[in-house]
Length: 493
Image (cartoon, rainbow, N blue to C red; front, side, top):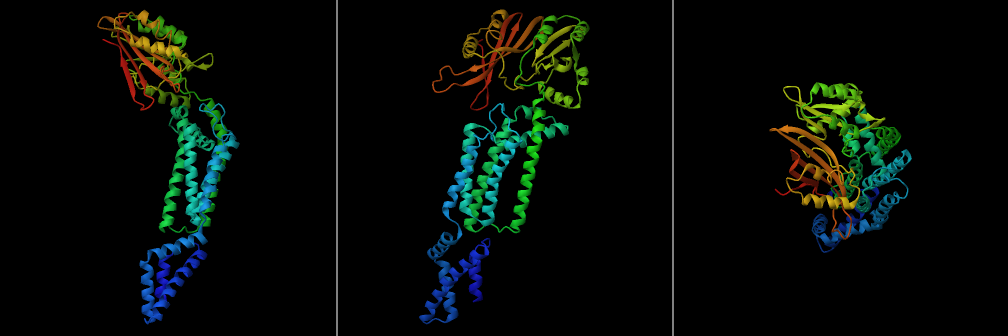
């Protein structure tokens, strides 16, 4: 009988609750004893009859499957439990749109408050708590239902691209704390934080789904380990979760105020040249004395790079240095900023600086404003500019395709940067006795004039180079919306 007990114990999954183990043990033992009695009746000794019955049970797959299947149906878990679980998870997230628990717009015009964030955490707890419960109880079908509900929610998120308020709160709080209390600048994370909020929501749901499916499979195959001290671990999970929920919801208002007051130096959504900067560009001529120009800039409220840094507090200096690294200025450039980088109390934006170079005689040999980095792709893609009309984009693309080298600078600029688009970079320098001027123009609008099923908007950047007032080079470049690659189109030779 000891051999029988050892054999039956080896068949029963170790992670089953005790009551269910006893029921399954009785079912298997009864089947083997019944077979052993049969062999004993036809003349075999009791010990040999028991050995033959155990051997038969071990090789009879149909009998084993029948016993285990019947046991699961009668005593373990109902299949229909998975259906309401899946519906509940999906419905909970879908209804959150109507409850303002999801961030309301891509621009966050209606930011979630602490209450919405905490409610969102409670929704996440409903999902994670259900998974923890199903894992402790080894309810594999319930796990499958929760996993399917999570995947359905992922699909709905991709359709709307709105993140849950809980992830908005966690992300903006982390960015705020790092930016405020560490040497690292989180300027670009504030600027492009929507990706973190969105993908945080998606990643959690995908991980939950994978965990549910993998664990359900392991439970089915009997390879899932028994969870020891389940009550203590479940209590610790609940405590840790709600500590995070309360902390994130409480810090959120402060982080939002910090974000609302945040100035991002060299903001890629603010590519323009102010009137004050353009005025300075017009007053500086190639061949002027650098010292005289420097004095004139000072009188107009401009300050050198080194002096400008001294006007910033510790936090502002960190942000400024993080942003200025993207520009890759020429090592001979002397960079000037408007003192305080603001006009009438408002920040001008990252393109409002003047870059000058002087020759060996102390005379100006180059002047520039805007983004003058060596790498033409080192900035993002601006969505501002005066190209707000769809026809302007069509005309801009058409006129660029018809550009020829040798057209006068005046004729080209009467359209590009004025009729459509906006100049956000320009420079002038001497080269082999000729005056070379360079412009970078941005325009945004509808870019698929032949599109029938939907309207597609985009951005086009144009680079124009003139020598002694005549066009020598022209290039249009943009981001491919499908691949993300930079595509270019150059004027005919």
